[in-house]
Each structure stands twice: as structure tokens, then as C-alpha cells.
Amino acid sequence: MFDNLSEKLDKALHVLKGHGQITEINVAETTKEVRRALLDADVNFKIAKEFTNKVREKALGQNVLTTLQPGQLMVKIVKDELTQLMGGESEGINLSGNPSVILMSGLQGSGKTTFSGKLANYLKTKKTKNPLLVACDVYRPAAIDQLHVVGEQINVPVYSDRETKDPVAIAKAGIAQAKASGNNVVIIDTAGRLAVDEKMMAEISEIHKAIQPQETLFVVDAMTGQDAVNTAKAFNDILNFDGVILTKLDGDTRGGAAISIKSVVNKPIKFIGTGEKMEAIDVFYPNRMADRILGMGDVVSLVERAQEQFDEEEARKIQKKIAKNKFGFDDFLSQIQQIKKMGNLKDLMGMIPGAGKALKGLDIDDDAFKHIEAIIHSMTPDERSNPAVLNASRKKRIAKGSGRDVQEVNQLLKQFDQMGKMMKMMQGSGGKKMMQMMGGMKGMR
Image 1 (spheres, rainbow, N blue to C red):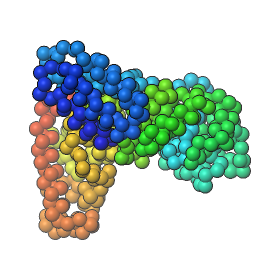
Image 2: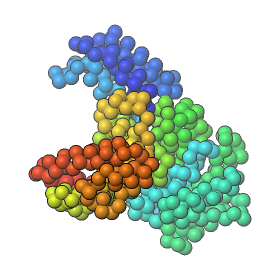
Image 3: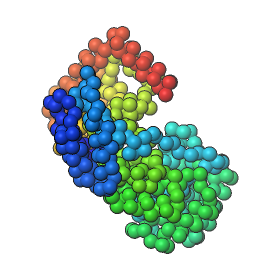
Image 4: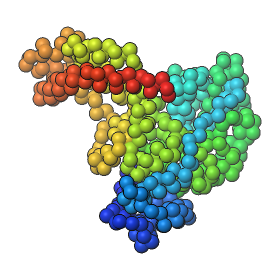
């Protein structure tokens, strides 16, 4: 996420490294490089210029704190300004009304239908809502089928009417269906186009006026850069939408849309999409995103994701098994599943401060665990619970069954043994306190 921008900003801010104080000369040199990095990320020239002017004004004349070097002070100033540029504070979604109606808008290919499903899944699992998806895209081939498939994946009902070509009528009927069925949230997926045109804008405007949604969201592909910002402005002029959703932030995005869209339309980014899975949705926090752009990671979000998967009762069972040397591959497999539910691995690693540089150029496969899972699934129940029984012939059978070689099986067994020893060492008061702290933090949140 924003790898190129992060690297260029890091180089720009290194200009001040080693200087004893902030001067007009070194600030000017730094802000010039920062502006160049923003322009390369497809941020609007006017916005980039205003941003660096604010950074320069704040930097000049400031005394370097005793615990800070000039470079560190400049990083703080840039981080604060980035946070403000992207919205300052996180803004939630409006779920007033019974049912709460959410209208999704955007261009074709922006990921509107998929994100409708992600949002429904988020509201169902995180907000304990009972959502209904409504298929109002009557033009794109298989659009209705796609929404039904998404609904089945997350176990959320979908309302559609294949006989009607009037999206306004479908939207109204969907809301009526939600009232009759007890669904307290309605998410309406509308048609997109390849470009902004009068017919599309008139249609989405008619739907908006007819249903008066509590929340109108504009879905935009983050990989389109400045074009995304321009499209958002065109939609906002017609719909006056409530917030923006940025999709495909896990791709090779330059980041221009995320950084400048709030400044152009004066509407907050509410959610971001970070992968293909239905769970790949995050609330947008400007301060956390600023941290990630500047290579500081996002430990808070990482801890929150871990807490969501943390099961205190399961942790106690695991702790007892470790103490009795009964931690087996079935338990290990369970831990892998929990990690996978937290999101794609590269995104998770990017949340660790400093990991961005270490991961540069590395292609971390989202299915990095599949070989390990294949080996474990090729074991018998007795072998998974008691790895000590694995002799040469058993290892050979497991390797053949999993499509791997014996060396990989041996490597996994060695790593599993080392992990067991490490977990055994953590069985002291420190490990128990960590588990208690995780449970307490979960309750507080």
C-alpha cells in the first residue's frame, strides 16, 4: 500500500538528517522533494503546493526539541498535515432510520458490487445488523447474478427483480421487502458506467430522490489516481454524497486519490478495501494512514484485527495443551486459520513499523500457508496430535500426499518443534499476563 510514495517521502525527509537545526535552506530542499513525491503519486498540483507551503510555514522558526532531531520534527509536521489533508478524524456511517438505507454509487469497474457485499458483511458481523442487498444494476450482464453470489458467500439475502428494468421501482420494492422481512439495513447496488454521462447521473439522481437514503457512498478505484478525484467531484455535484469508499488499496496504487479526495469534495473517506476477501474492509483512519504512508506502520489496527480473532476460552485451552506438551498440528492449523482471517499477509506485515522497507520488492503470497496446510492435512489424526510418531516412511507418505518433498516436511516439523519450545518458555507469568491483557483490551474496545 503506497510503497512508492512511502519510499520517496522517506528519501525527501532524509534531507534533514544530520542537521543541527531547521533552516530556510534545508526546509526548502525537503519540501521541494516532498512536493515532487506527492506529484509522482498523482496528487493534484495545487493541493501538493498548498500542502508543502503549510509544512514549510510550520517548520520554519520552530526550535528543535531536546529529544528530537530536525528530521524527526519534520516527519511529525508532515504526518500531522497528511492527517488533516485526509480528513483529520475518522467518520462513522449513518445507520439511523428503520431500515437504514445506504445507496452505493460509482463508475463501472470500481468494485461497487463486491464492496456492497463487504459492507453488508461488516455491518452484519461488526455492528450486529441484519442487512438486505438490493440489485439495481439492470444493465451490466450478470450484475444481478454477481450480487446473489456475493450474498450467498456472506449469508445475506439479496432482493432482485429480473423482469423490471426500472431501478427506481426495484429500489423502492427492496426497501418494502426489508421492512416486511425485518432487515434493518438496506444496501442498494446501482449501475455504473465506463465514464460520467448524463443518462447515468440522471438515473442515480432519480433513485436518490425517490428513496432518500440515510447514507450515500461513492465507491472509487484508488488505482485510478487523479481521475478518481475528478469523477468524485462530478458525482458529488449531482448527489452531494456523504462519504467515499476507496477500493483496491492493496494494488499498485500511487495514493493520490486517498490523499487528495477529501480536499477536493470535502467529504470524508469512510471505508477502504484492502483485498478480494469479504473481510477485506477497514474503517478509514486518517492518522493511521498517515503513519503507514510515512513507514511508521499501524500497530493499533494490527492489534484490533488480532483482538477480533482472539478467543479467550480457546487461548486457555491452548495454554493448557502447551503446558502438558500436547500442542499438536490440529491446534497449529487452528492458529493459522485465525491469522488468515486477519487479512492478507503483506497488508498485515505492512502494519509493523519499519516492515515496509524490509518487504520492499518481496512478493508475499496471500496463500503462503497453503503448503503447510497441505502437509498437515496429509497427516492422520494420530500423527497430527502426536508428531513424535512421524518416522521416515510416514514422512515420505505425507510428502507424496501433499505434493511436497520430504525436505519440506522435515523443515515444518523442525519449525513446529522450535515454536513449541518457544511457547513453552512463554508459559510463565509474562505469557499469562499478555493473554489477560489481550482479553482486557478486547473488553475495553
